Length: 251
Image (cartoon, rainbow, N blue to C red):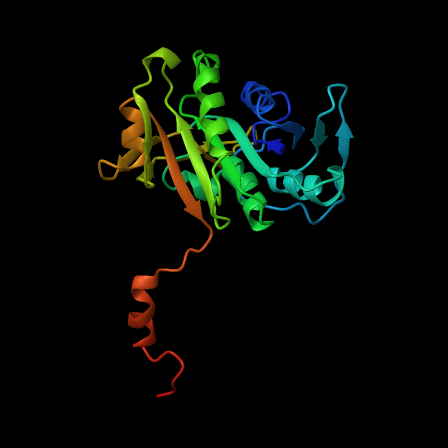
């Protein structure tokens, strides 16, 4: 089994090292990751300049681009054979609810899915990585079980979030849906050294909402959340409603 491993925290990230090591227990791993942090880059591509992929002494490739660039290069030129899986992470911080729209970690997995390869995105729900290593064994068992699933749906990726607690305190694994996240006061207004106004996106605080089966509730309760995602964003319940608007007709 051949596994492509990538991330958005960069080639030196602890989460990437852990994931690559875990995946090596179930298959042959190729690591292709950004040369620096690319958090929040979503599914962006580098189109205005060429990309450079550098082979490191440990065999991994570092790319001066986004997570999506990394997966595209891996599939298009760097790997001699198409991988059986694309697995992205382990992200330093959660990717739940609307995070999946911004996350470079999820986007790397989504790019694998777009190429017809079953994919997994893995995130650790704390930016304090103190207990990350203690999740090694449960992550190894979880990935080992997922990659053995027969007839894994090709239109779906799995978004996995590990709670930021010691591994021996985990309560189990829950299959979840996406919760809803609202940012408050996320844009900071400040002055540059010349007194001109600038804006910095980030910070603030988050309000979550969602039912008992949502990802953030599961993680908050000490469970690993596993959320199936797919790229079809069509709101099927509204198709007939919008058709009823007669948008194609002229008054």
